[in-house]
Image 1: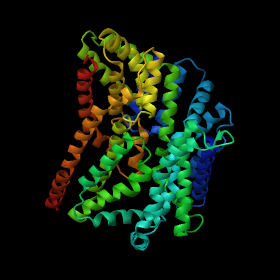
Image 2: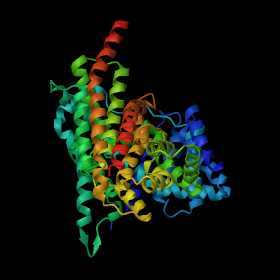
Image 3: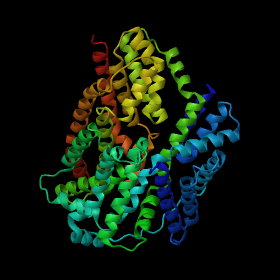
Image 4: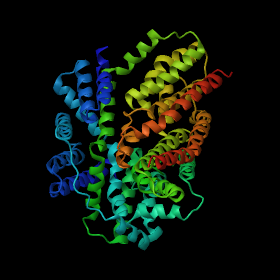
Length: 227
Length: 318
C-alpha cells in the first residue's frame, strides 16, 4: 500500500496548486524510497528516466521558426485569411480542423497538427478571426474560451483518429501485450474496432462545436447587457 | 546515420542559446533563475547520454529547485507591435504559411521516406525513432527557409525562441518529468497494487459490471498515470484477460481496442497528461491552466459512456 504514496502526493499537490514540477519530483522520490531503494539510488533512477524521456521535448525545436514567423505577422495573416471568408464562424473553423485532423490521423499522418506548430500560430488565430468577423471586437474571456476549444479539438481528433491506423504505437503495444499472453490478433482487427468509437467521438464533439457559436453569442449578449 | 542523439544536441544548443539570451536581458528581475533553469536543461540534452545516472538526477533536482523556490521570470516582450506585425503580414501575404506548413509536411514525408533511403547498407536515420528525427529535421529546414525569406538579424530566431519558451515556462519540462514519474511508478509496482485493489472491492460476477469496471478503470488509471499506455497492461492483465476474455468469452481484439480508447477518455481529463492539457494553456496564454481540461470533460464523459455500451454490444457478439 505504501507504494501508492506517490499518487497521494500528486493528487494533494495538484489540488493545493503547488508547483507541479516540485510535486512530481517529490512524488517520484517518495515512491522510489517506499519501494525500498536507497535515496541516492532513487535520484539516479529518476535521472535515468528523465534522460530516456528527452524525446518528449523535441517539439520545442519548432519555437525558433514559429517565433520568427509570428514576429513577421503569421498570426495576423491567418486571421486575415479567415476574415476574407464571409461564411466562416468559430464553430465552422473548428469543425473543419477536427475533420482534417481526425482523417489524417486515421491515415497515420499524426504529425499534421500539434499545439506548438499548428494550434498556436494558425488554428487559434483563425478561429478567433472568424469570431471577430461575426461579432466585432471580442472580450478576453471569449478569446480564452475559443483558444481552449482549439486545443481540445487537436487532442480529441488525434486520440480518436490515430488508432484506426494499423502501424500506430498503441496498436503495436496492444498486439505485443496480447502476444505475450498467448493471444494473436492482427493489427487490422484492432484498427477496425477503433472505428465505432471514432464515429462516436466525431458525432459527440462536432455536435458540441456546432452549439459553440450559439453559446458564444449568448455570452457576448450577456456581457453587452452588463455594460 | 542520424540518430536521436543528434537531435538532442540541436535541442541542447537551442536551450543553451535561450539561457544566454536570458542572462543578457536585464529587464527580467529573475534572469539568473531563467539562465540556470534553461542552462541546466541544455546540459541534460548535450551531455545527458554520457553522464552517470546520479549526476543526471542531481541536475534534474537542481532544475526543479530553481523553478520552484524563487520561480522563473519573463523579460519585457521585445517582439514587434501589433501594427508592425500587421504591416509585415500584408507585405508577405500567404508566403508566411510556407515555412509554417513545411514543418508538418516534411515531418510526414520524412516518416514515410527515410525508412527507404539506405546508404552503404545503413539507413540514413535511425528507423526506430524516425518520427521524432523527421520533426527535428523539418524544423531545421523550415528555419532555413524562413531565414532566407525574411532575412532577419542572425540572432532573431533564438531571441524569438526565448520569448516563447519563457512564456511557456517550467510547463515545458513537465511532460518529460511526468514520463520519468511513470517509469518510477513502474519500478515500484504501483500498477499491480491498483489492480489487486480493484479486484478485491468490486463485484465481478456480471459481464456488464466487468466491462464497465474495465473501461472506467482504464480511464481512471490513465488519469492517475497520465498515459493510457501505462494503464493498459495493468488493467488488461488484472481485469480484461482473466474476466472479460477467459471467464465470459469476450473477443480480445474488441476489448483491447475499445479499452485503449477508454483510457484516452481519461487522458482528456487529467493534468498528468501535461503535454496535451497543460502545455497548450501555456502556449495559448490562458490564465486558467485547467481551461483545456474543462472544455474536454463533457466530451470525455459522453465518449466513455459510449465506449462502455459499444464494448458490451461488440465484445460478446458471438
